[in-house]
Image 1 (cartoon, rainbow, N blue to C red):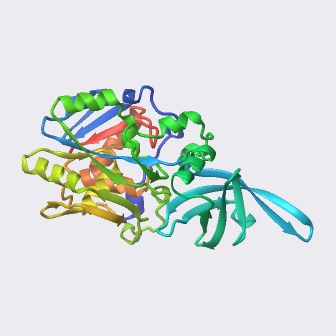
Image 2 (tube, rainbow, N blue to C red):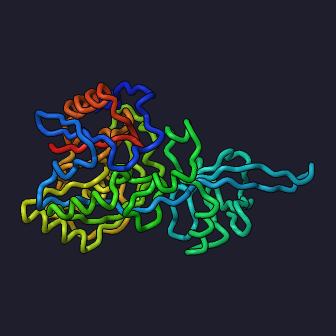
Image 3 (cartoon, rainbow, N blue to C red):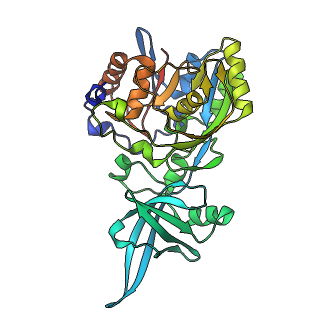
Length: 348
C-alpha cells in the first residue's frame, strides 16, 4: 500500500490544544459494522458488555523537555548558549538519548546545566541525537527532572503554545504508575476514577500493561511504499498476571479492548496463535492492513494524523475504506483531533 492511501484533509481548527473538561466530556464516535454513533466518553459503559476486558497502558510521562545553559571557554573568552533538550529514551547503561536545539551549539564532552546540582555531559552525537550522562540517577534524577522539566507536548501542540502547569495534570493518565514515557497514551487521558468505577461495577474487567511511549511515535513516514517503513522501538511489559487475565477473558468469550494504540501494539507483540504470554522487552511491531490481530477485538483510540502509522493501525483493524468513512464523519461533525482531542471506539 502507498502512503497516499492514508492521507486526508484535516482543517487546522480541529487540532485540539487543550483537552475536554472534565476528561469524560470528550466526544466518542462509536464505529460498528454498518453504523456510526455520536456519543461521549462518559457513555462508554453503554457500548461495553459484562465479561469484556479493557487493557490500559499505565506508563507515566516524564517532564522530558529541559532548558539549560552550555558554558564554554574559548579564545574570545567565556561564552554561553541556551540549549533546549528533549529526552527520547533511557539506555541500558544509564545514559539517555536526546535531541538538542540548537544542536550545533553543543560539542562532545561539554556540560549543560539545567538547575543547581542538575546537569548532563554530552558523551556523543549520532544520527541527530545526543547521548547524555546526567549528574544524578535514580530517585534523585526523578526529583531533579520533575523540578526542572516541562511536559513534552506533541509537535502539533507545541507549535501553537508552550507547555504549562496545566499540562502536568492534563497530559497524564489517572492510572499512570511507571515512569518512562515521553509521550502520553492519549486515549487513556479521557478516563477518570469515577468512570473506571462504573465500568468495573457493570462487570467489565481491567488489566494494566506498560509501554513507555517514545518520541518516535511522532516521526513521519518517509517512504511511499509503507511496507518499507521501519518503526521505532519502545520498551514494554506484559506481566504474568495481565497475560493470565487476558487469556481467561478470551476463554470465557469476552472481548479484549485495548485503550490506545500503544496498549494494542504491546499485547499484539506478546500474542501468539494460542493467546498471550508474559512479555518484557522492546517492540517495533508495525501493524498495517493485512495484519492478523491475535488478541485485539476492538480499540478505543483518538483521531490520528494523516499518513501516520497509527492511521495504518486502525485501518488494519477496521479496513481502510471504513476508516476513511469514520474520519469523513468525524471531520464533518467537528470532532477534535490528535492527543488532546476526542475519541473513537472501533468495533469491527
